[in-house]
Amino acid sequence: MRTLELAGSQVPVIGQGTWRMGEERSRHTKEVAALRLGIELGMTLIDTAEMYAEGGAEEVVGEAIAGLRDQVFLVSKVYPFNASRRGIPQACERSLRRLNTDYIDLYLLHWRGDYPLAETVEAFEHLREEGKIGRWGVSNFDLDDLEELASPACATNQVLYNLEERGIEFDLLPWSHHHGMPVMAYCPIGQGGHMLANSTLKQIAARHEATPAQVALAWILRQNGVIAIPKAVRPEHVQLNAQAAQLQLDIGDLEALDQAFHAPQCKQRLAMV
Image (cartoon, rainbow, N blue to C red):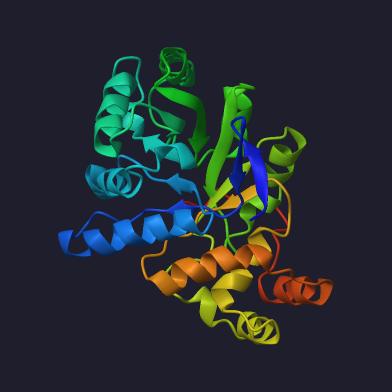
């Protein structure tokens, strides 16, 4: 699988998301198995957060990476209300226990809250110096937030990005490319299946003998510096996600998708879920 550099490591351009995992005990075994299968298929970046199922997703991840920790690039996120000088170390320790590891490769501020960014960065840097995290970054930051942050130590910005939500292409994505900051795209295949029912997307998928979800992922990866983190539990979906890294869309495909899902013509408010 193609890789790119993130926080000083080479990571796959398609990773694994875990939002909504850990919410029901009856799905626990299948969720663990899905993540382990994804690791076997090369999707060794796993993204989670203390918010997901209030730590339940981190527990799923902890079980999935048991015995495989050295193969995995682990990303987790801290609540904004924990992003203080005292709160971040405590939140990180809780995440480490749930993940059953002694370090997190990349630790993100989930979205901007009330604590000053300088205080959050200070706490992140202390964790890095202690070896609890490898690097730190942010999530759901718009361009003005990144410009205020103004830190070359910020490793990434994780944002909502898919065919239906292209707002970051107007200014945030070009800025990220210019500054060499990889973007992590969450919900890259949308939510609820509405986007995947689009007729143009289905026609392109049929031409490539692929699924609409694979085309949506290939569209995300048409450019450098972007990582997609879809979530999947069914084994066949995990396998299809991994295979999407090999799908190459041609100019005709991209033009048709531009007609079906318009690029932004002006600044848009940063979309979040």
